[in-house]
Image 1 (cartoon, rainbow, N blue to C red):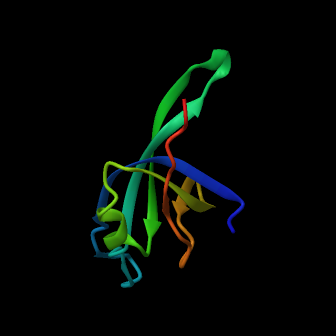
Image 2 (image 1 turned 180 degrees about the vertical axis):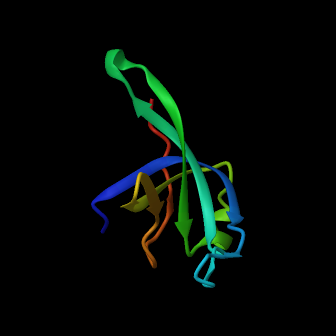
Length: 100
């Protein structure tokens, strides 16, 4: 189980473009998913935030576009950029609707 989880709506699934860096190494080609969710603010309001994550489950997530999901999240910093990803092999599940 991951220490951090993300809950939000799957907006888009795509494959990152490939390229070659200055050292001649290939990069890109990974599946990516964009999930939008609520970030709570002081005073009880929320703002929406879109997060792009690398995943090994692109095909499964394409079937979940438009649905609310819960997934484990890991991240790392590289310079001034934070990269988010879903750890390999972890299960992404449909979120249950809150009962009124």
